[in-house]
Image 1: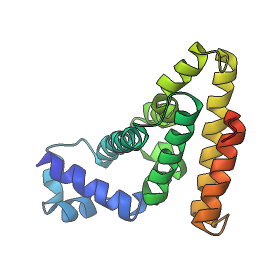
Image 2 (image 1 turned 90 degrees about the horizontal axis):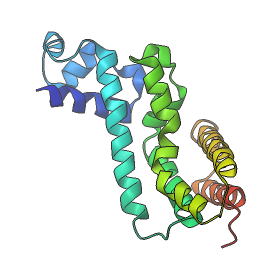
Image 3 (image 1 turned 30 degrees about the horizontal axis):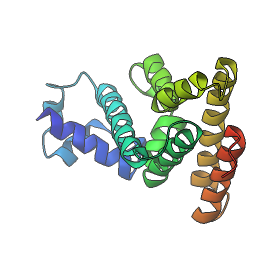
Length: 188
């Protein structure tokens, strides 16, 4: 039964975002009484935190599948970020949850923030290590690139999803690809 509440919350978050997630809405979506939810979860914040972890795992699996055949190094880092971006384009409610919602409104504030902030680093961890081992980047360059890419990608997604800048998806993907190529210093 616990899984019904988790699934209902995930559907609401993907479809309409955190603003519609309430104990009553989740219970209604799950097909159970709202009082039943408290048998499994301390509060709605705990449920949302579980969903954040589940969304991260879902994104990780998609990225791994889409990037499995890409050669290690710069190319793979670029492919990982493109897949990561595609996930948030497909699920803007999850982007909103991860990057726009006030963490004080969610349970486990600091762990949630740190988990989300370090997620792109985790997705690319093997590739960053590979680049260091192959002397493509130094450790210092790698740390700077990690920060630059996280902030650039989040900013590009923010402007595209909330302001439609650029106006169409093709222009957005070209902009993203150009930024990734520039940041990673790739020439293909």
